[in-house]
Length: 312
Image: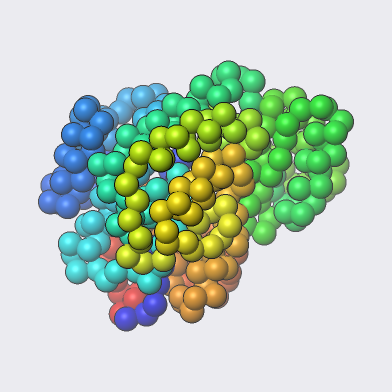
């Protein structure tokens, strides 16, 4: 069996019916039932039927994506899939990784991420913040361009997601992001794409949300992970509860260092990095970060069988 990591997607990969291909798989059904109990609503119905507008509300998206990622993971394990040598998650996906590693219980994590989503939504009025994907420019140039834009506009803007060597997402006040897009295109960015988001995630404007999250995290039981969890904010693995809480707190208003996360997984000698959960966004990122890494997705029974064959 080849050494591998599982990585879990965050917000943005959701879609109505995203777990339908599993049919009545017992592991998936059990996760949706546990999620429904924890959130006191029919999560399975929301996933199956939507509507899309409800699924795309941040306060629904975050717990639903957590549940979907864990449903795929538990189906993998139920079908005889081996435990990964390490796990990680993109932004919100870090919570899925912590649940997969048994550091957080699913029943604790679901209301926690809903609280996180509510705090983030309340931190900045809708329309006051923005995010944009900067494509075709080195990440250090994006960091420098954002600093110039912040100085010129007097508004917050910074790199939020270091997704791959030529794609960095920026976040901040709308005026700051607009100015940064203008400057970065002038610096050679091929595209600066505004993102349809309800809040400017992973920037300094999220600090009030992070402060509220820190208080909530203090009430949640966190166990030492059974497998290493490489976090977003430091691209490092920590095992004691205070350090895990601190990383989750800082992640809320700090950048997702995804390039470094993938590099850290590969540095552990892991030849395969498999995405666990709906979509294939991370699979593409992994390939662009490290062309020698074997990457695939596990999101339905067919892709699960394909991934098992890859590891054999």
